[in-house]
Length: 480
Image (tube, rainbow, N blue to C red; front, top):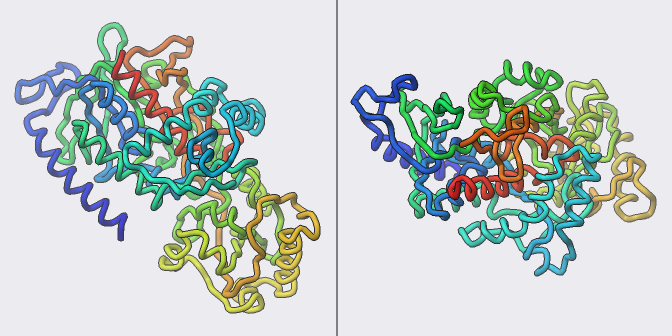
C-alpha cells in the first residue's frame, strides 16, 4: 500500500511538472523547437531517477547548480526501489554507535580480496573512503537507517545497513530533498539522445514526453543514471551472452538506449560481458526473493530434499550451484522465525509465492520430495547452527535453528535483476573514451557503469555504489 501511494503521488507530480514543458519540441539538428525556442537551459541534466540519479541531482543542486532530472517511468526509484534497502558500507557512524570496529582500509582490502583483485581499485577506494560520509549525508536529508548492523549474504563483516522502512525510504526522502532544492523533475520523459557540440563535448539531452514531443535540455554537464540494459532481451544477449534467456526481475526501465548513445561517442566499457546472477528469483511471478531470507536462516534444497551449497556464499557462487543442478527450480525452505525476521516475507505470502505447512513431513509432501531426506537435511543443518559440527558446505552465517513451525518454501531459480558491466569511469565519475581520455560533459553513476559490481558481489553493494557515485558525480558536475 505504501509503495502504491508513493507511486500515485509521483505520477501526479509527473503530470504537474510535465505540463510546464509545452511548446518545447526540439530538433537535434537545428537545436530549435517547433515553437521557435531552443530548449531549456540547465547547469546539470541527470537522466534517470533511481537512487544514483536522485543523489546526483540533490548533490548538484546543493552545489549551486540548476538541475533537471529526467525519468522514463511515471515514478522515481528504478531498480533501487525494488530492493530491500540494504547499503553495504564500512566505517560508518552507525557502526561506531553499535560498537562495531571497522575502517575504510579494511573495507577496501575485503572488497578487493573478494573480487580476486578484479574490481576497479579507484571505485573501491571511493566507496571505502566516502561510504560512511554518504550514509551521514543521506541521514541529513531525512533517510532513516536501523541502528543494527549485520552480516549479509556474501559478507565477512557486519556492514549491512538497513534503510527504513525499506528501499522506498531513501527514494521518498531524496525526491523531497530534490524538490526542496529546486530540482525540476520530469517523469514519463525518456532521454533518447545525447547532444554534442563540434568539439565532442556533451551539451545536453534530447527526450520525449508522453505525447511524443521531442524536448531539448541544454546543460553544461550530463549525468547518466539510467541503470543497465537487462530489461531489453536483445541488448542483454548482445552484450552479455552468458545471461541470455535468464529470468529478469528488475525495473522495466533499464533498456540500455543511453548506453548505446555513449558508445556512439567512443565511450569505453568494463565488465560488459559479465553476467550478474542471483539464485533466488521466484519461478512463477519472476520476482527476486531478497537474500535476507537466506541470511536470516533459510536453506536451499534440491528435488531430493537435500542441500547442495553454502547458501550465504556470494551471489555468483550460489547462483552457479543452482544452475549446475540442471533442475527447473530449487526450494528455498524456512520457518516462522525467518518470516518474523524478514519483513518482505508477508508480501511474498500475499502474492501467492509461498507454500505453508504445519510440519516438515507436510512440507515435504507439498514439495514432492522424500520426507526422510528433508528432515535429515534440516537436522544436520541445525547441528551446524548449534555449533555441534561444522557445516558440510562451509556456511558460517547462522541466526537460529530451522525448527519453529509453521514451515514454508518458495520455488526459486537463477535469474538476474541487473547488469554489472557498463561505462568506464574515473574517480570523478566522468565517462572515459577508449583512449583513456575524458568525454567532456558526460558523467555516469551506479548501474550505468562497470568496474564495481561484477566480481565478489555482496548484498547491498549496488545501493551503496549508486549513492556514493551519485553524490560524487553530482558534486563534480555542478562545479565543473
